[in-house]
Length: 292
Image (cartoon, rainbow, N blue to C red; front, side, top):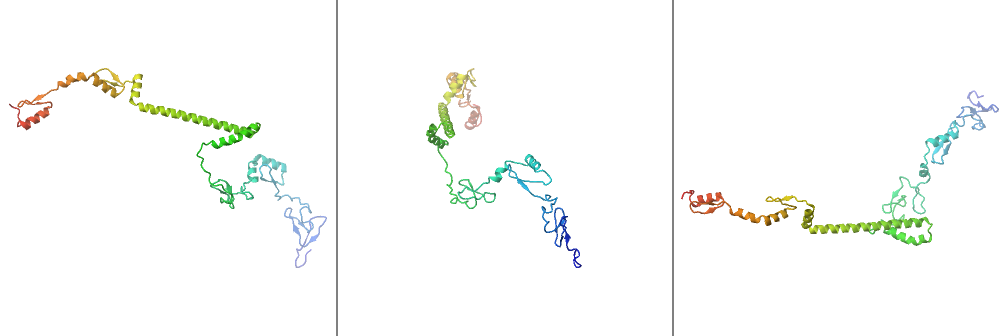
């Protein structure tokens, strides 16, 4: 085997029935044996370690994840271990049902990098149809200044004839239920507004009545806080107390007013109520002396 120039040239095939000398032998990467061209494959030389580097993957039908099969383990055991530990059925929707551009005829899958949300219609589109004319955008929605349930009522009224014809239809039941709820809401709102207007009118009327209403209510309830200083009578307001004093004690105050003390000048017999005025008069008119 070999030549003087290449003494290690060629080797025998490891298969016992073959044992052929091959000058370009093949070494198996699993069992590290040498084989000829005819027995180089795993199946031809029945390699015992053929499944050692197997990367067979099974796609889980529940979560759409890949489950790698272990060559040294039963596939059923590997499957049970995945179902009990790593299987997440919610991932199936994310993998299989991906978002696509809603434009008719466009099959572009929407991902993180190619998704644009329209500001007017608030729908997600691909980069190709990101502008309004490309995806036939209806434009910004106009604000509805009417009753919030007006459209619902109109739709329910339009659908009412259909509900009469097909009473067993679920959609007619929903429309009638929505109509009833909207009508009850509207009637309750009108009743609340009527009560509010009545309460407002009563409050305005009480405000117009003013002190008279307050005095009558306070006197009837017995809330008397102001007391007369000359008699034990009590009154609810200061105005009532002043009126009582002017009517009841005015005659009694007249004699007190006539008993005011008067100082007379000794020289000119001029009367003064204030002694200070008398002193100033004497100093100014009589030279500062009070002798006669």
